Every structure is written in structure tokens, then in C-alpha cells.
Image (cartoon, rainbow, N blue to C red; front, side, top):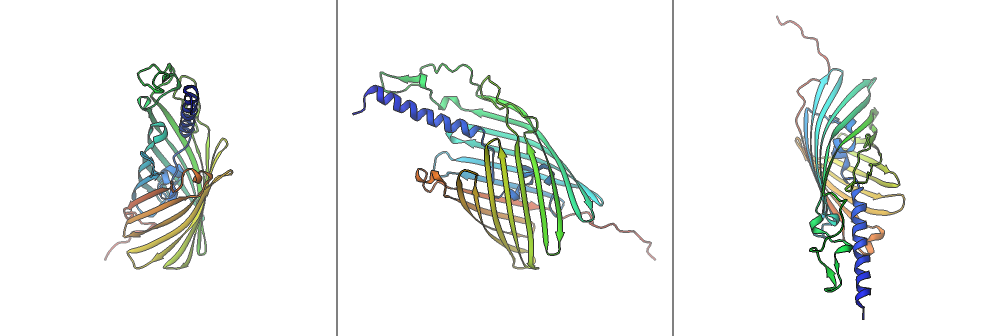
Length: 338
């Protein structure tokens, strides 16, 4: 039989573990499995990096959906090309809504992006900057603290003062990101690579009065589209992120099959992990019809957490609409009509 004191310490340890996992989640950056569909969250330099005039992208991710409420991320991005032949500019807007259920933490981001592309002998070099505001809120009323333990009832009582006087439930700060990219076609293969530095201004992301500056987040990505034929091509891709000692590594390959002039189908596999742990295997299906692209992916948990989080995986949906370009890609010389 467990005595009152033992019960108290067990609950205290359990609560501390929950708070620890929640506060660790504070520093976890938003990430997508289909990261290559969201230019503005991947690299500011990729703003306007697509074939067309304007592009609207929706991304939705639910992680550990079997837990209620789950960890959810939703993104909306809008991009527009401003062509200045032979080079071009790109402008964009990104809105991010993210919630971490373990900490009752909600984050909203509103970011503006600007990019420039320079064509040097068919080598396309891109530079981009991004800036905006981050709004964060933690629901303290949904949490309990060790100071609220009631020995008489053997449970936590929110009617008791927590004694926490230095915690704020909302905080806001500006954030600045920058990036660079490169693309070139080698015969049947189009290669691209990029690097982005997030949190350039090292904003203070503390929910207390003690300063806690966000670390730099380094993001490297690369991909290669190889054409087997006009109707079949593959796209291997890789992503690596690092912030202090935290890392995220994702690699995969997508196979594309053109059915007709309007329809293309896609299937892919992938893997996510870090330098210390395997996270998940990934399956992706989707396709495009005219100007619409849709993708669905599922992360199958294979991490060390699987023993205690069996079947706790993640799913993700992307939807992209691109308008056709109104500007010719080549310069023309007008001539008189007779």
C-alpha cells in the first residue's frame, strides 16, 4: 500500500516529467514532412521559386493524433513573382498556427518574405529575407504546480495559489530569417540546394522574466529531379536542421508519373531521424491536376518512444494552387505589321 507521502512524491515526479516535456516542446521548431511544398517556411530565398505567377499553399499536420488534443500545425502561404527579365523578385506572406497540447501552448506567426533571383549562365542564384511577429500563449489555468498539492485530499487543488509570480501567459517578439539557394540543370537532372538561417536576431522566447534567447536554427536542403522520360521522373530530397544540440534529419524519394496532360500521380517513401534517435518512416501519396497539387503523408513511429507511444504517429496534408504565368520567359522584339 502506498502511503500519503509516497503518493505525493509519485505525483510530484509525474507532474515534473510532464512539465519538463512541455517546456522542452517550447524550443521545438515547427517542422513538416512535406517541407518541400512550403517555400516560405523552408527558406526565405525560395519565395517565388516555382513555375507560374502566384501560388497559394495550405499545410496541415497532426502529430500523435491518438492523443487528445494532438500536436497540430497549420500553415497558409501566398507567393507572387515580380519579373524583371532576365531576373526576378518574389514576395510572400506566411501565417503559422501551432499548438502543443502537453503544454497548452499556442503559437501564431505572421511573416513577410522577399527574394531575388539572379540568372548567371543558367545557374540560378537566390537570396531572401523574412521578418515578422511571433505571438505565443500558454494556458496556465489548465495546469497545476507542485505548490498546489493538497495533502488533505491527496490531489492537486487549483484553488491554492501556485506561488509562481514570474510566469507570463502571453508574450510577443519579432523574428528575422534569411537564406540563399542555387539551381541548375545538368542534362536530364535538375539540382537545387539551399541554406537558411532562422532567428537571426536571437529573439527572447521566455515565458518568465528571465531572458531565454532563441538559438540560431540552421537549415540545409537539397534535391534532384531526374527525368527517365517525359512522363516519369524521380525526386530524391534531403533536409537537415540544427539548433544548438537538437537536430532533425529527413530524407526521401518521390516517384512521379504523368498520366495525361492534366494529371500527374506521385508516390514516395522517406525517413526522419536525428543524430541520437530514429524517429519515423514516411509514406507519401498525391498528385497534381491542372494547377492543383495535393499530397498526403503518414509518419510511422519507429523511435525509442514507440514502447510507450505505440501507434502514436502523424499525418499531414498539403494543398497547392498555382496560377499560370502572364509574363513570357524570353524577351521578344516587336515588329510592324503590314
